[in-house]
Image 1 (tube, rainbow, N blue to C red):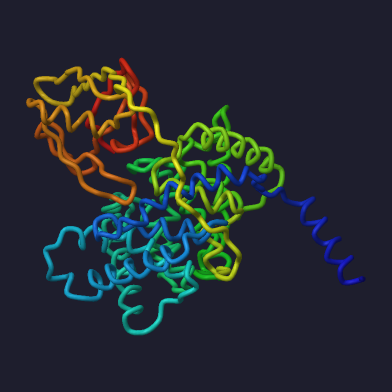
Image 2 (image 1 turned 60 degrees about the vertical axis):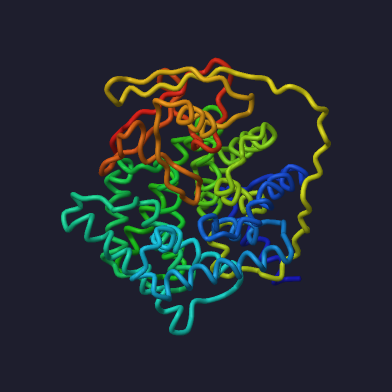
Length: 432
């Protein structure tokens, strides 16, 4: 009993010294419904719709999809090996080019680790070399004096460092140093991703490096950066409890759950965020598979850092497809949505009548089919995003922002946003 008493005493002392970010249990039925949203996506195993984040999220959750998971991982391996280890370098297939970019490749490495696989063998070394090459290329784009920017974003830069770290692969001090400088000088705030997302992902990467004692010469800066990121995320908490917004909260919680601290009211902040998340889940706010895949681990008290030593034998409840009650036949309600574009000449403004529940993408399709409106999209792991509107292509460091008129930014993409009756949605070309 003496060793046990000593352990309990030590735990009490540590608990008194540092607050922990602990997620209270959320009703299992709410969690199950989230998982059920992912099941149809796991049937989409065409190369353009494969998403490693879905597999990672399920493996870190309390839910499983049985043989469907095995098939999904098999499809991921076939696709990424074909794109990255075959002749993809000489292939003009745009989907391979998209999937073999920095972020998707990093997520694929996380998916392998979620299945308790370490990168090994000649093929594995080529995957690691590819991701390290991306980081070196991004480092060069940032420049010696930190005056440039990554070709992608500091979010993907951080994700790539994390993916290599959980596979116990080191990256050069100069690569880590660029991310440290960005956090220390708020350079990441200029990126297209929300800053809380970038800070949380950078925090997870730094915490992984710290745990493995990688980059020892940078250790003081890494420790300071972790404290800085925690402080910034806590300051970003809204009155409702979200860190930044509801969709950046799961990733923020992943970081905070790995980062105990004293004297910052960490526990109370996480409880408030948990209450906000539960309310949002009940309201059906989480529909996007990427967002769900970041949320499910949190609800199971897991983070991406659990991929360092994943428990692949942990029991998980089997997911079954949701059974929907048949609705009586009725004429669908029709709503009006006004589409506005002020970033082109002449400005565009037109009202359309669509069935209630239509997505913004449905509105854009109707506008294009009606005539006088054109748009282009590109697929990403979080869904399609706009690349052109009315012939106006996004330039370097530009993106089409979605706003609820007059100036309320929308947090969802065109496939997930569902305008309400009478709303005006503006597409605005902005720089970052």
